[in-house]
Image 1: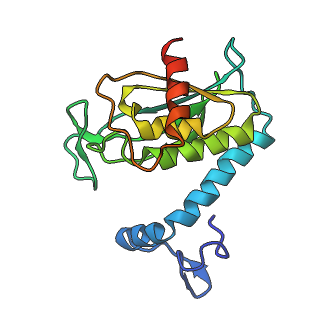
Image 2 (image 1 turned 30 degrees about the vertical axis):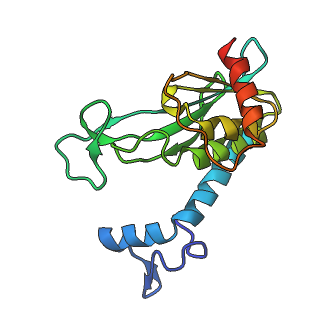
Length: 198
């Protein structure tokens, strides 16, 4: 049962009891508290893995893999909110998920519209999962990404984190260099060259 001290206005009481608001009202109230819920969910997911004694098995190189990818959900024929055409050519959603270690622990999944490009709003997601992974293992990380994330912003974010290597499928038409990042670009280029030559 939800704790009223945590969500005092989510489930109002009538005569001392709980009741569930209508679907539109509940959705509105959940959206109003979305940032708080995300913070709590992120903490609980990480804490569970820490306290459960979960294994984070590395690759032969000693790196713990962190796999991030978008997948599609087929919701053809429905009228759900934010359903749109996916890259798989059906109507649905295109969530993004991050999995840690050879065991494939799910660190985070973010629901997205079907037509949303993989790189849109990706950097905050990447920063969050790298922070979670670093709290769970001291081993070096190997982030594995497909070509949808071959962008300078991705390379720069990865270069900012210590003991993080990456494999990024290269796209010849990589996006233009962002402005105001002169100090970061050489390091990102160096890291990129090291992985692409491997």
